[in-house]
Length: 367
Image (cartoon, rainbow, N blue to C red):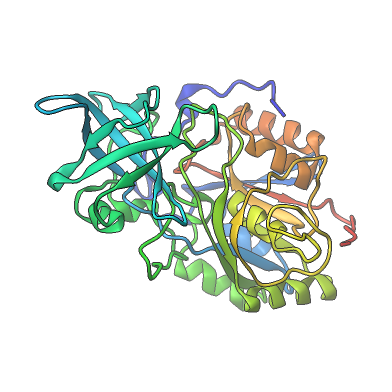
C-alpha cells in the first residue's frame, strides 16, 4: 500500500528525543492514536492512561548491534572504501551483509553489491568474502564469509547503522531500548526495534501499576535500508512459552494484545498454532516457537493474534504499511498519516509514535 501523503524532509527526526528535551518518554515524544479513522494527539507519557487493565504489551528484547564497519573493497594497496552493514547471521556461520558507499557527512548511500568472490578488507586484518546474493537475482544483500568472530569485530570496530536523515553519529546506547537483553551468542538486531525506544523504567512501572502486563519475545531484525522499500527478509525469532501463555490468557479474558513494533507482530503471528511452519500463518493459540520466519503480514493474510500496534511513522511507500493496514484498515492509515503530516509529527527511529487500537466498542473475534 502506498499513501499519497508527502512527508517533508524537515519532519525527519535528526537527533534522539533526549537531545531535543528532557527525556525519552516525556513531552518530546508525541503519540498519535488511531481508533478506526478517528485520531487523537498525546504525549508518549500518556500511554498508560490509553491502555487498560488486562491489556498485554508484547515487546522485543533484541539488542542493537554496532553493525556498521569500515572496509576496503579490492586488492591491496588502496581499494574502494565501503561501509559494511552486518545484517543477519545464518545457520551456516555466514553473514548477510550490505555494502554501502560512505558519505563525507559520515552517513552512507546505496551501491551495487557483489561480485561473487569479491574481498573486503576489514579492520584488524580481517577479510570478508562475498559468496552469493541473499535472494537469487537480488543485488543489495549478499551472503558472506568472515574469517573472524563477527560480534567481537563489531564490539571493537563497529558503530550503529546510520542513515542520511540524522545529523551525526550517536552512541550505541541511543539505539538500545530499556527492554534490550544481550544474547549468549552475541546476536542482535542490525537496526533498533525502535517502537520500544521511548519506554523508560518509570513508564514500565506505571503500566504495571495500572494492570498492563509486559511480555517479552525476541526477533533479530536485519538491515532495512530506508531507501530500498523492500519486503522483509527471513529473520530469526523466539517466542517463549511464558509469553505465549500470557498472550493466550489475555485473549481468553477479553484483554487486548498490543504489539510494540512491527517485529513483534511478525513474531507473534508466526507463532500462532496451526501454522505448520514459521511464516505460514494460523489462527489458534500462540505457542512457544523459535527459528526463522519468512512471514509477510498483508491485508489479504490479516492478523490472528494482535489487536493493536505501537509503531513509528513509516515512509509512505514502505512495505511495513501493509502490516499496519492488516491491523487497522486502510481508512485508519490514510486519516492518521494525513494528521501526522498536518500536525508536524517526526519520522524515523528517533521520531514520534503511532498507536493503532480497535475502534471503541469494536470486538475482534480471534480464530
